[in-house]
Image 1 (cartoon, rainbow, N blue to C red):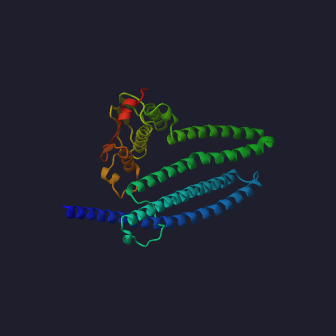
Image 2 (cartoon, one colour):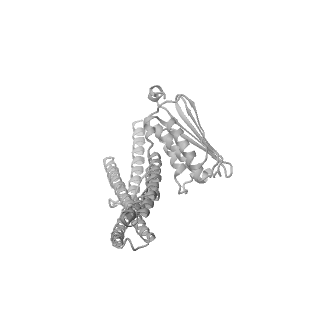
Image 3 (tube, rainbow, N blue to C red):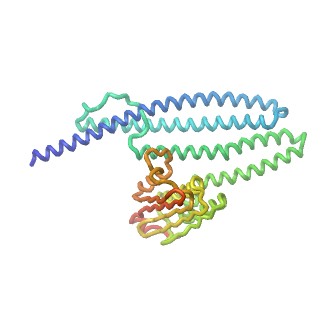
Length: 360
């Protein structure tokens, strides 16, 4: 009996060492890959920094001939400056993120190495260098991809709306300044245009902040926030989104409320942007031990296996499912080409939440 137990223990230890060794090798490969990405990103940052200096210098030269140059030439110069600055900002953020991922992987590799040594398997360690790639587990890779997709989306929004509008503000303000004394009527016209642009930009910024993190989600909870978002969605897209709620409306833990809101938000955007739906409805059931939400549309539909397949580069639905499952929930997608889409997800509510949630 003792001999058999010892054999089982040896077998378990060998299996553990083998798996840890494989993970360690993968981490080393990832470190090598991330080292290459960091070098490429650093080179791009340097190139964009030089380009930024050149465009800034050119823009300053234009200011000396402001009154004689066509407005379109001035506008193009400011837009070029804004574009290179946004790209430089994005690349610097990407470089910092890669460097942070590299440090995390190095700590992971060191932990794996020590674990193998303590388990008596130091002879199995490969003689790799310390630096290499991105992430060791599929979940971590997905999280990093999601973070980067969110960052890129935010940068695009900032560039397409806010940043370009601010560039126009600068141009219009300088035109007003030039014409105040020589042509008051022109200055007044430009000021009115500037006021209209500022109002539109302010509205865009409010929408941007709401998409980023609605303050009412913290103040009022997920159900009022979903209703407000549905109203805003209808105003913007012309598609009504009725929100039906059953069960006891109450506050939930913050991470649950955020997940429910983000899931519904993403599904509504998918229905509008990808499925071209004309009818969308949202149902939320606040059960005693779980919250369930359904988003259904009459859009173009899609092949579910293709959308969730490992080769699919889009991460929307796959990430949505993973985000839900990380909270112990589940997500079900029903869709066919030309037949619309129905997505249902549920998230369990803990014992504390079941009895501690406050009603609205």
